Image 1 (cartoon, rainbow, N blue to C red):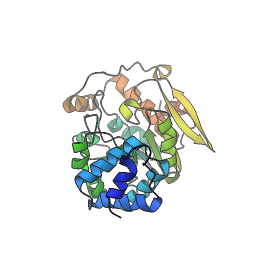
Image 2 (cartoon, rainbow, N blue to C red; image 1 turned 30 degrees about the vertical axis):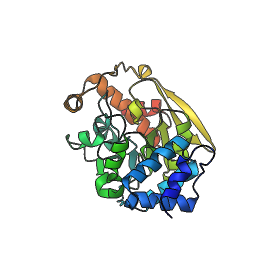
Image 3 (cartoon, rainbow, N blue to C red; image 1 turned 90 degrees about the horizontal axis):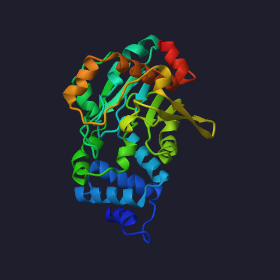
Length: 297
């Protein structure tokens, strides 16, 4: 179909906008990923789709199309960590500290990175993962290698400069066929949306209100587990575990972030263990974060 029809469906105003059918959405996504549509058309659609508000059925179809392009490998006993691609601005990443704690449980973690995407302008996971020595059970996947079509849209997305539906869809692409996954949601409606999009791809799925939109805990937060048809909320208070780490509100450089990780303080290590405790819940090795933390202590 002519791509203009898809732009009209999302960009002609409340009275004329409509949801795309499954067939239309699939065709639209294929045209975007193959870039047979012009860059200006792609940007116009992504912006209109965002403003009109994406229907969950459209997102599910788009995610299904993504799966047709992704080149995957099998890494058993792995947990996929769903990081955003717009980076972290105020605090260091913690994932490089997780590997040593997970080895005793025969667990690996899967992380995915790429060029910086809109809109936070932070330090990317790729910046950190490619500039530090990772434990052998931390597997970094570069999206330009396993999903080049989406990576190649970086220029269009950065020219638009705004968050789009792709910011949500791209967080869990499962390049290692992981059985377990954890994602992040800042606003509560996205907890349900994350479950509707991703949960069926994993044996166990967790959503956490993590730091800067990542699945990392730095302060008091909530996480959600699906129990049958219900999504059950739980809370985590670092102070309960004797952690007094003070998260930053100021921008840090890549060099500062790497120094935090290469020379971690005692409080940062304790914070890493708390995060790993939640990963043990994700991998069904512990029933609660408290139990997981005690297993690590």
